[in-house]
Length: 97
Image (cartoon, rainbow, N blue to C red; front, side, top):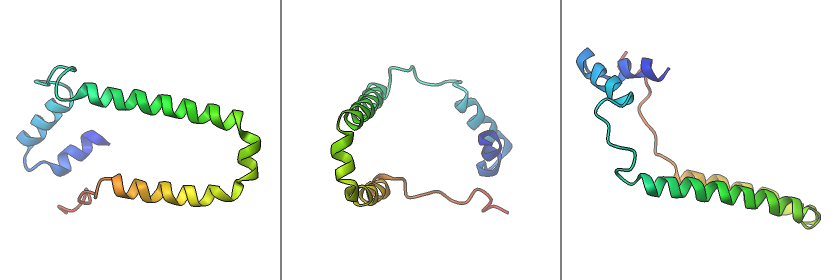
């Protein structure tokens, strides 16, 4: 699907070929370049956070059941936080037709 999308977005076959080469690492920067350490730290922090969240859920399940009413407000808050942080969007892939 991703490779097919390249041909819809490219302005020419030469441009599409360049995009495909870049997708497969031809001429790419080394893995340690351009902030990859920050990305790796954020991924590790996210994994640790999820494990701590699961541990807290198991340890404090009785207290959480008593506060079941809090679930929906937290879900709505999480949804709106996702909208604030999320990408504004891209053009529809078939817009050239």
